Length: 86
Image (cartoon, rainbow, N blue to C red; front, side, top):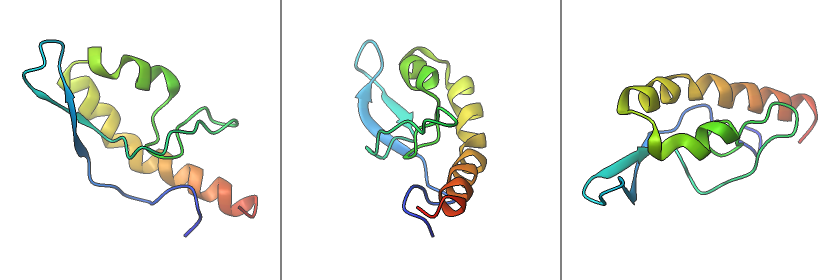
């Protein structure tokens, strides 16, 4: 296993509230916030910078659709790290 990403992570229900502060916001963030230069994806959660920036405004369906593809993205980052000897 390389140092950047695990192949699968359980979604985290973060302490962030929605705009009214009344509901928890589901997020894959693991507080390892570093964008990979080649792919532009966070090596911690697999989201793009744009997805991270818009996350709180997205619908639940949009967030879950992105979360469904994050394991594949994290595997891509893992393979890249292994190929580069990281």
